[in-house]
Image (cartoon, rainbow, N blue to C red; front, top):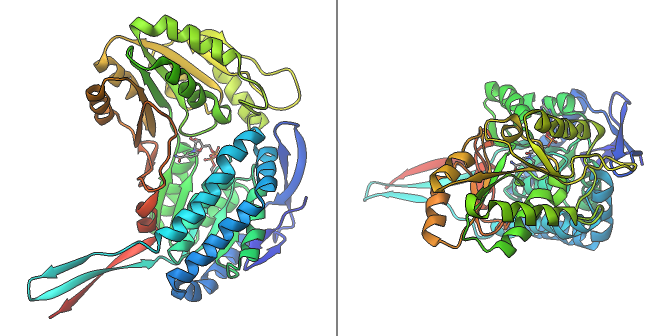
Length: 468
Ligand code: NAD
């Protein structure tokens, strides 16, 4: 497979003529060649988007909505193929791509297609003197940069609100998972999205991504990825006064109190630990368990972890480099004095598979509990009371999500309010309502996406004051 950039409604070769290998992490085979784009390709895409902007931004919301719904239908019609591509490209189990990734991509387009029909703006009346009203206008060309862990899920989470609210976009998917973005481009033609409204440029972050964040004609950047990259994106975009949304890394706590419904907690905390082989920004990689049930919990959790099946419950890590990183942290855990309760090894077969790994015996100051590993590796640490649970949970520089398990309603609300976290789940995990604000505190991000927050981000508020 030889991919092109999608610019102005056509697939074009990168101007350098250079291509990168796209590798299937489960087989280590090259499955596609993708453009190694540079600033010339990004510039061509931004120009195509700028040409498309006047007509698209004036297209009535009802018409834009219809086109987005058609795109959602096109994704649904090609469900099997997209799930297959996503699994092959990212290493995730096919069953997970079918359960999570592709349904969510469809939902993203349907959600924002209909959200724009129900949006309204404010009016501020000054007695009999004047009426102020707020116009919310699209920004122009926006840049969208997404990671490899939930490729189409997160790319569509940005493209849908961006174009629904009248912007045109240049999207840069991860160089490691380009396939579903490429298919989405083809489907956008079938759905009748006008040329230039969606442009997709493939390639490295340092080159193509950087060119997007520094382009003078890009009004905003919506970025999802690692915290270190987010800092580089901010450094490049801020001097150019681009609007910026940053959804970054996490080191999320799962707090289990002694009164929790343990059957349910086992099910969901196992999923929170190892779904997508731990490569979800919302995964709960630090488990804190109240002392009286600590031994029972560790025993039950380890037993269940051992039963997880390769290819069904977990897949391959994204790359050889990421495999090195994850196994490096397992070694570090041993050096820091941790005990490997189960797992701890690369699986002896082709592909970048690591056994689901549970580590005990480490305190909150250890690097293994401070740094994002982003793999199937979790720690379990005991705590003695509510205050200690909160202190442990808040002890990192991240603040993306948390999950709390208790049957005590008052405590659930108290702990939720005290956690430094953009999302707190009580007795559940990854239950997502697309209307709610989504984002991170501390070094997990800046700004919120989701529902009307996304539509606000992708529009400029203009006050119009009319004297009576
Ligand atoms: P990454 O930061 O390496 O890359 C993300 C994207 O940014 C890729 O498309 C990459 O090519 C691009 N990029 C890299 N350097 C760039 C630069 N200098 N300028 C512009 N773009 C650049 O992240 P990743 O490894 O693809 O994804 C994993 C990370 O993403 C984890 O830290 C995870 O927690 C985070 N993540 C966060 C969320 C969230 O919603 N907060 C969701 C998913 C993943």
